[in-house]
Image (cartoon, rainbow, N blue to C red; front, top):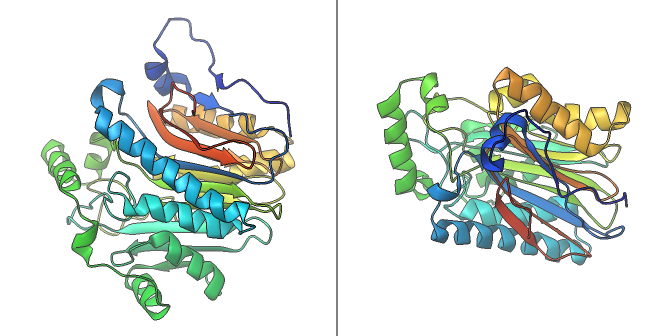
Length: 350
């Protein structure tokens, strides 16, 4: 394994700032130590947001940490038993999709019609197999449907009613649309509507506590995988699809370079094909994983107006977290280290 890097890397500005505010201006990078040559690694995220310490209750923080740890430990158990990356990703992300504390599955953001519509994707790094669903309204665990598309069809993405029908035909668990809706999400939609209208509203109300979920894995077989699941943006235009189900934008995995899962302003992740470009920089430009992730999230997206973060993992088991927001709910676990999680950008996983 490569020599462990500093846990927190931040470029200096001319004027002093708190690290929480600094995250918005210059980005925060974390490279956790996972021990020498781990047999397997799993890293997860629960979304990037603007919430700072004084805006999040102790109860909410405790629940976020508990859910992240539960997801890590569920995926890790499968990896430790020799399971594959997609198996571990599905198991871990189902925990977060079932929790109302994240923007995926139950508790997903509501669109302009008040509906919860789900996007998800997954990719294997050994053969570049991939699957995704978009605009689903009935699939209880969208990440399971994405994996089923990858493994049971010759397609990469299914959309809307077609995705729901596919899930039903393949025995995946469905739910009534009201199952996904929480009162907090209803209030966020009301707030968004009150502030503005149409597409502008999606940029007016911060996603705050709640966020897209994702995972990257290195399994015992030496294969990388990545997966992402989301409900999109509050008050999004009906029919809008973000980056999470788009291979190469919010999600990518290749054994030749890295595995990436993103969270943030999806339109920017799509326009700059963020996940694929990070891996391409590693593979073809011989950049480090840390440098490649910073180049996209901090140096490219942020000046263009796009905020968010990524979790990334290379074939040696090195993990990088990069974000330009005040928080990136995240966690990591390996064959040599226990589950460690964090909520804010200015704290290390522990």
